[in-house]
Image 1 (cartoon, rainbow, N blue to C red):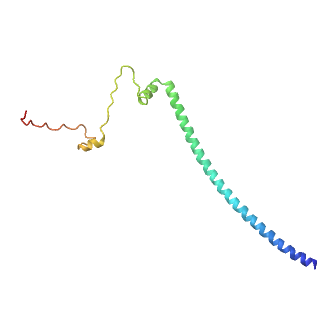
Image 2: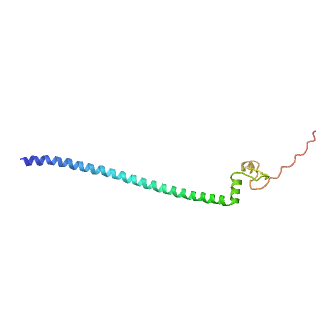
Image 3: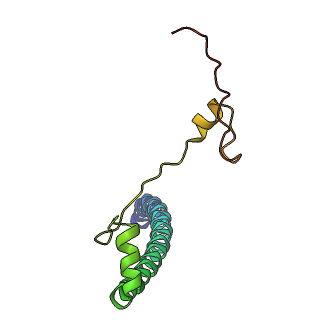
Length: 129
């Protein structure tokens, strides 16, 4: 009789052990899925960082080329000073011309590409002093 009771008592323990094993397997499965998701996110972030790194390297190379050009070419240095810094040589006269805005040209009925407008006709005198 002891074996019957021992077998009956062992059976619920086996069921509990089986349920615990299944629960553990499900928990590990969810943890694994979360790990795969994090791995995919990390790979995508790595690709973005590699792209940014490559763009930064190209920008550095371009700036180094420009720096070498400015160090070795007086003409390039003068062009930079004139175009970007607005510098002039002593004695030079600078004329600043403002382009006619397209809106004001359209307001008087002139196409911006039509060239100079003809002046209006003179007004005849009224004869009053």
